[in-house]
Length: 155
Image (cartoon, rainbow, N blue to C red; front, side, top):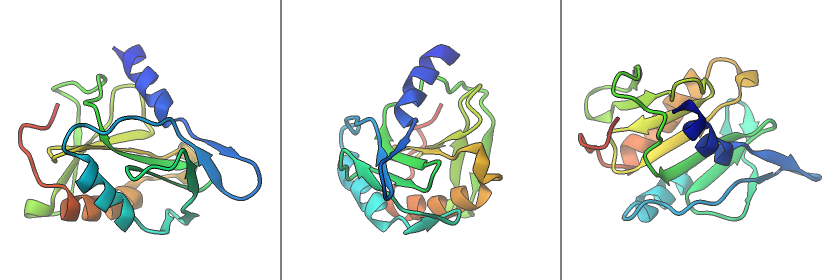
């Protein structure tokens, strides 16, 4: 099962190219009914995450974002990741209705997936940035503002 998820995680492997900050990301089709709330989330993301500046991405997308070098990547509206299991440990960030639950697919320590929202959000934070807690917290606040809670959207 890890191999199947690593194939999907390969879509999050980002490459910085050329002068300036441009990041090549693999395009994907956002899940049905998630394009609009995901575009609102991505439009509201900060210009800086973990002291890394927001990068231009290619191809252009309303549902993806990247910062820094090595790039931190965010994709909203992804299909349910196959590497998630019912017993995947969760990290809850926030309080009450604003809580966002994050899971890490087994064997992929730099990828986090927000669950129980109207769209899955994947955040890839290279280990060179250290503890990803600040990034998860900052993104969680925006997820709770833009993506409705859905109990059935989980592992």
